[in-house]
Amino acid sequence: MKAALPLALIALAALPGCASTTAPPAPAAVTGTVVWRERLMLPPTTKVIVRLQDVSLADAPAKVLAEDVIEGVRAPPAAFKLAYDPASIVANHRYSVSARVEVDGQLRFINDTHIAVINDGPTSGVEVLVKGVGR
Image: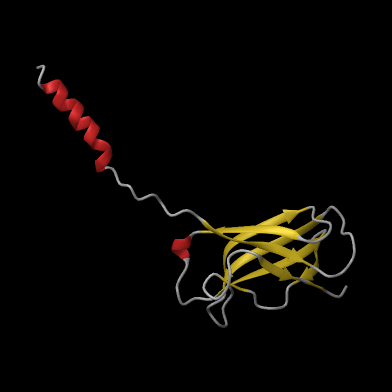
């Protein structure tokens, strides 16, 4: 009986070595700012909506991978962080960031250019310039 106790302790001590040492991949993120050139103070009801999208398929809607809604932004810049699962990234796909600024649910600013990220561009320090829309 006395010999069994040390053997049991040795077996218990060896168990952590059997456990998997691979942790799940940490979520990645695209970070940056949304800016506009117009010098005006927006109302507190302003929302900045930023999306990370897979734009690989022509003639098909972009697949949204992440979205960040920043409320109460009255003047630029508006910082964003779009967390995504790195396992969902396909090596030959194109990814972009898009942004829109809404005041009381009405579109006020939007970006009008493709902003490549991840495979074809950066993942940090991304600047999204949005332009005013006619009212």
